[in-house]
Length: 306
Image (tube, rainbow, N blue to C red):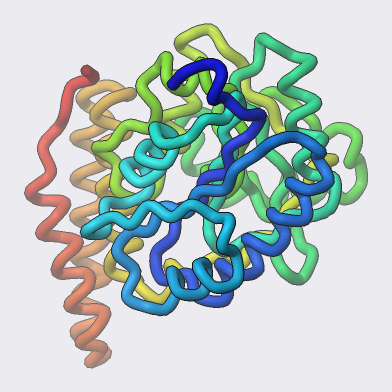
């Protein structure tokens, strides 16, 4: 990409059957980009949607550039495709089921512009009812995942409610639901690891950015609403398999070999029990999903970091 073709910000939205959620995302993004007063572009990378997502974009948002993929390649590969086709100094990655609140992008870009030691900054994420949604965490291991699953949301939701000024912080990783990156560090580390299909590619990215010497910031004064699970809940098998394979891949790349072995054994026991309960209750759909997950877990082999 030539410097003379470079622009200020590229917004990259990963879409798979986004429908009306995508319309809300693009509408709020359009308003925010206009308020920035900088040259920008919007790219929708479509993972072979079968709904009317692309028709909606073409008709209602003709200025948006569409990259249509021949099949569902997952989040990481689609995000990298969008990034490679972009021209922005800053890369804004977004889910297709969010709403950006006023002032969010100006706060994010201002922070990165004035803090060159940071490669990534992420906004606060809220549910549609206004409740706090956890969107960051520590590097993943058994202890941090236990805290993340059972205590982290309640802990940070409480801080957000009673001491909101204490929420701004350096973090290990931020959710890919919405994050702003400098272009140079993103490509310096090779972008998202395309071995991830769905989930944990963001935690992996955060770890590699920090290993390269950069910092990551959670900026609570920048806000978005995330209609969490609105899309993923339509495809429970895809989401569950993606999550578990992503978890196994992360452990194989970034934790001790024994941790990977323990995780694999734990997941097999867990989903065998779930499958048994689903079978006993006559829930053939869940039983089918759990059987497929067990098959994927059994077949997963530990990978080395490249």
